[in-house]
Amino acid sequence: MERPEMCSDDVYELMTECWREDPTTRPSFSQLIDKLEAIMTRDVPYCDVNKHDESSPYYNVPAQADNDSG
Image 1 (cartoon, rainbow, N blue to C red):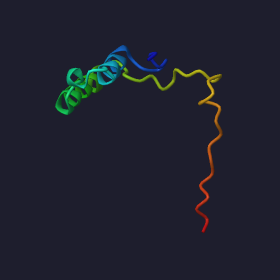
Image 2: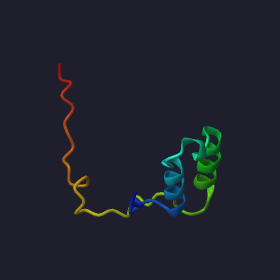
Image 3: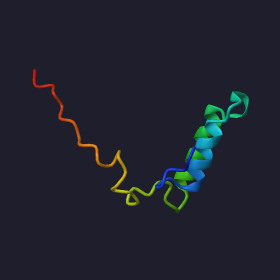
Image 4: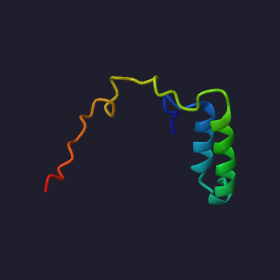
């Protein structure tokens, strides 16, 4: 799996740990909490929302209107 462009190296590393083929080598839920907490409390962005590729297909998908007008 490729690292998403706006994803930090730390978050990507955690993603790849979660997708390991052998489930016994994946982080436990409590380990995930600890790792995410550590990532989110650092003084560096873990997800750069200003870094985007406007040519990406998912970026150009129009928003769908909520058809719940009853």
